[in-house]
Length: 364
Image 1 (spheres, rainbow, N blue to C red):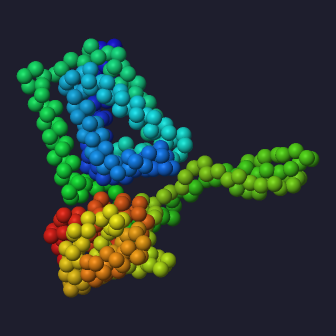
Image 2: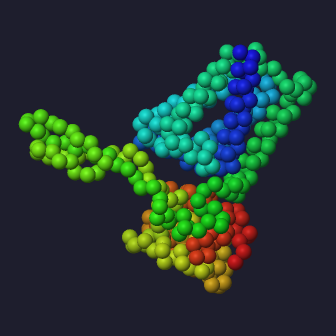
Image 3: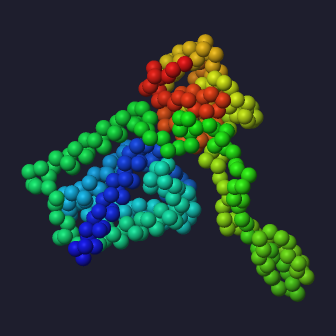
């Protein structure tokens, strides 16, 4: 039991620290995932949605802190109980997500490592078993530090985590794991290689033969059956290749103009996924940056999922010299974790990406 506890202690502690740090790098992205869980189509807890960002920060900092506490053997009873409660909650979420196919990515490791719902649930079940070993073997968790210094590292951990959270919330994630990172080309991200795996489907054909139903399963070909065809049910049994960027459009009046705009030598995108939730205080500065960009030969466009009426209102109120185009809200949230934000592109390649707090760092 002693050796099982040591193994579990190291494995669980390291995994919680890694998982927490990855999400701490992008707490806004994790808050979007929590909003999915709280939405009416999933857990139906819409009153929690306004608190998603605060909850995401608390959860990710707690993950890191508990991982450090466990490795140090600090407050073992509190640490193990907290880990058990947290993993029980996560296991419920991932099972619900997998069984009902509600949230296709749990966000356990942010955008760094994508797991399917069932993979996430399996991971949580393994962690639950290891944490139960820790729970029943608490007496073997001995502190690594002397009593006088035992509060120093845990306290420093909380301080460092809070500092990282403050930094990434007021700027952008330190490491960008998304397909829209600086240096990425959007057109290349949308392309599908010629030799890419194709999806595989299974077809269940239903016939009426001599008054009885008969099901014939094929991979696509129409079966030869001496009977009356009733219907067919199609099931995807193996997914095909999905490009990293598969939902990007820049629409105006129902027409997708992305192919044309991404060929611009100098393109500035002002991205505000929801103009109602944007920080409106910075739009005048955004307008000044846009005017400077135009004077330097850039084409400037706005991109939002808000209605055209709201976009026109913002444009008039702040004297913006560019038009807004429509893009899916989830896509815009994926592109950049700031509302608004500015991107600078050269023929579809992202050269610069800044939070609204860093507009002065743009180089035009």
